[in-house]
Image (tube, rainbow, N blue to C red; front, top):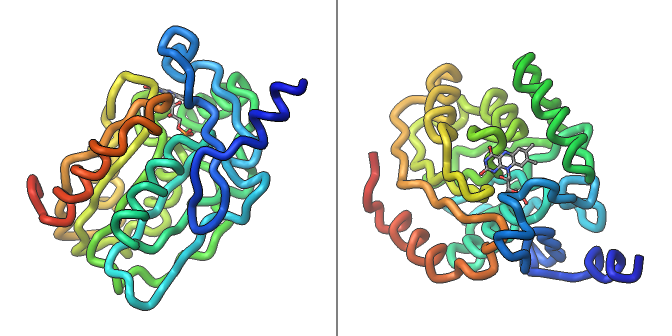
Length: 227
Ligand SMILES: Cc1cc2nc3c(=O)[nH]c(=O)nc-3n(C[C@H](O)[C@H](O)[C@H](O)COP(=O)(O)O)c2cc1C
């Protein structure tokens, strides 16, 4: 019990002035098991926080992300430090369970039925941004469902944008997630998007990826590898 309490109260970073707890950090690959079994705070990172929302008039880029157990949120915080981008956390009405098995079974049902979660957030006008960083965990080798729901509802706002996808995952890579983003945007009527190469980070190693994250951000800013 005492160990649990310490873990819940530990802080692995900050985002927009609020603490981040990333439950996978510090686990060896053997103990981590590709993220299998990872718990969360039961509120998709927000049991102690307000959903992240930093919107300014000046920013030309925004980081839009979802994170269940904190790793993707920690990547988002590192990108924000380097870019001063605005921040918008994707929030669902009914958060995913802190229990991994329950989350897995809900996610499987949602995927089979293509019944993606209802969002609980106000989405601002995105016209001021030229670069959109999209962050998500990989679920079943594709986009996690809150990002699918967000893009389905708001994809039409992403026309003519530079899209920079980043993700944390269990060690099996990006799957078809970037193709899924492209498909959803096309169906939403978004046109003329340019995609940067994706950033893919193992969920238990996000705290050791600073250099890789920084060099990816520089490449995004300089527009290398756009497709
Ligand atoms: C429902 C579910 C399905 C997952 N499926 C995969 C998968 O197919 N491949 C993979 O590499 N990792 C998978 N993972 C592991 C997560 O991608 C990984 O733990 C990620 O770092 C979690 O990010 P977060 O802390 O931002 O939520 C899955 C996790 C969950 C909860």
